[in-house]
Image (cartoon, rainbow, N blue to C red; front, side):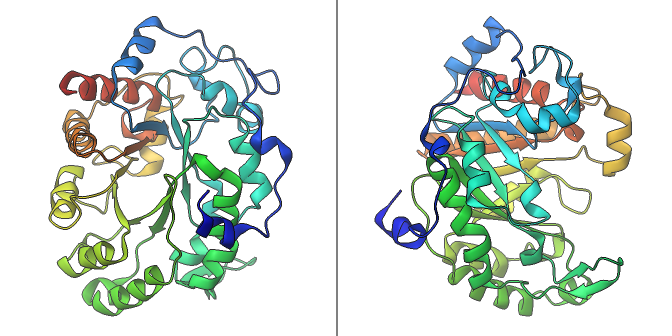
Length: 338
């Protein structure tokens, strides 16, 4: 951790487990036997490439990631250590933080279960990125912390960096659809976004901020200049409301050719989440291969890595049917051109 980070986060106490090496297994969850072909593939990949899935609690991954049949709850509690033993899975997304902040000690417990090179992509709480929330009765209310930099630092950035330390990768602000007023006239939103991003502390040691949107109308020159001027990376998102990854990559590259590449390959084109979940469950095979998105992501990773920058791709089961198998295909394509 840098001196600046230490100054920011020295008031956060961490459990001793955060500094310990990851154990061989946790809560009886065993890793699947390593496939020699995947081990060889992993060894051929460029340094700085971080591939992973959006979560790790899928019973359908028995034989692919896990060495037995385990329940979703068991994997959620104790499967991360086994997940991290897969030769290609050097990263993972933490989604639970989108729904509510978690403590530094919770982040530290995640960090204690993974080896040194492993990185986490962490979603910021939706209280920061959504202008409205639902109360306990389901009614819409204004979010008191929408684009609130001070609250973001205290409740998200500080505990995340303190807990994950060297395992922190992209800290992603995922903005849901912002509504017609914003999409018709994005400038007021972009102005407020700029002030918010400018107020965040600089991060070092592999951690950095990234931003994802769900409104294609926001992808203007002014939006990308906002990210460029604040040092925030654009996160490519495969989503029904967004252009194809290739188009997003092309738009962002005009302003963001220097820095890490970040993508969340979340959903197959033409599907809604519920439809894809139903079609692909239990997520143990590729059902609908998306060769165009895969090729675009592979090229973007190669371009970043060749310029000396890291590349992150976090894959959801709903992209093709099985995130670990999608990652294997993506890794093969990246290795071929490495």
